[in-house]
Image (cartoon, rainbow, N blue to C red; front, side, top):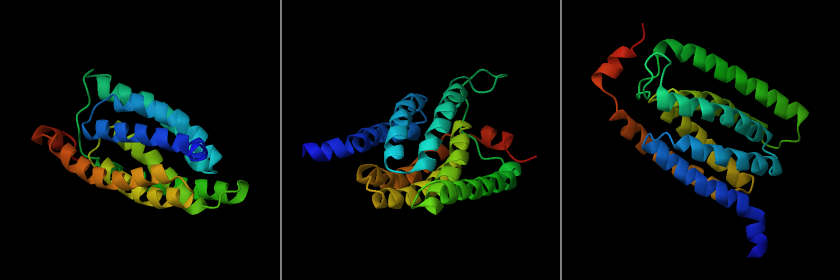
Length: 201
């Protein structure tokens, strides 16, 4: 038992933090960002130990986006100085978003395949690239960010079980269900005015 705990304690702790994080996200509570910061610091150690180098590097990006997300959810834009509301992803940004995400996926895959000993470069690069774009959409409080995380969670669930990170693997399986619920919960937070203001020009 002690050996099991010694081997998996980081997995277990980050999983517990992940549960708190997703519950706060479901409620659109800004303190999810504080919980996320702790989870990300521990995640850096965990992913490095497991050879998930893209995920490890991603945690540094998450830390920066945590500060940005907390500020956006607390004060919103510099003009209004009020909490940012839930809005739709602007259609005018969709093509650019897809292009940037695809290019990032290709770049990360090339790095993992050629300069690291990663055994899962395709999946690791996919979840990392999509998460880079997803955390930005989350910080902007776009409703459709939930669709991004559903895709990330499905692939990550399979990947983590493969890499012997069972607790977080199970967590990401639960995330899929929670993300679906989160979409409907956030959709109720939309108002006709918010929807109208964020139509593509």
